[in-house]
Amino acid sequence: MEIIIKKDALSGSHAAARVVARLVCEKPTAVIGLATGSTPLMLYKQLIHLHKEEGLDFSKVTTFNLDEYIGLPADHEQSYRRFMNENLFSQINIKMGNTHVPDGMAKDVPASCAAYEQAIANAGGIDLQVLGIGSDGHVGFNEPTSSFASRTRIKTLTKQTVADNARFFGGDESKVPHHCITMGIGTIMDARMNILLAFGANKAEAVAATVEGPVASIMPSSILQHHPSAKLFIDEAAATQLKLADYYRWVYDGKPDWQKDA
Ligand code: F6R
Image 1 (cartoon, protein in one colour):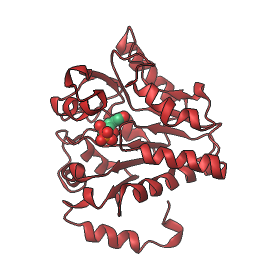
Image 2 (cartoon, helix red, strand yellow; image 1 turned 60 degrees about the horizontal axis):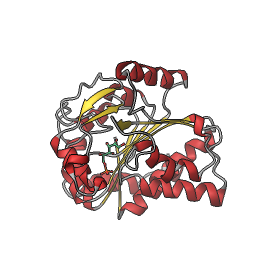
Image 3 (cartoon, helix red, strand yellow; image 1 turned 120 degrees about the vertical axis):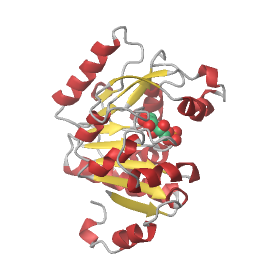
């Protein structure tokens, strides 16, 4: 695991954007896994900037989003499909047909989940997966005790996640769907690279448990310790509970130039 501590969310997001941009330049047909929520917004803004100002070309890129609420149609203002269309896809030159978000309105959820896994496999697997993290350590919507072998499936959100996400539903917890479709931990671990972004003091505990705690399904994100290529982009506020924060800074600052954006 590589821990990259930046002074704030903006510089952390820009550093993460460089990794995504480098992949897209080196492999124009890259398959990228995407997250929603407030965390990746600055990353997406920067990718839009790189597209508009520097010609970063997404025309051959394929994307797969991590998750979607069950029961929200694609045009619902809180659906993750709409979030992605508004905050990224409509502002870059990606082909909409190359973008995938789990279908929250699927009539046959298990079949739809199996088809999602098959579509990822047919695309050649995910080259780079973008992750946020819940205050309870969820990645995607893999809540605590999710199987490390899990694939795309239905999950029930914890009360904590429902409370955390009520801010997107006018603060009304009763409006937050309790069920979602999410890629599994196994799906996420199959990505060739994972980049996890975490900003703000409310993520500090989960970040410390992810990086320095035991690997256990009670803290789903801790499985990233077993991933061969996982990078965490965090800000100072999210780094406050890391015991080895100084070591991570020392490692990053001492990297040879050729490795800096790798
Ligand atoms: C969203 C997702 C979730 C979020 C997490 C953090 O697609 O997969 O794991 O990344 O709930 O959400 P924010 O960024 O809103 O704090």
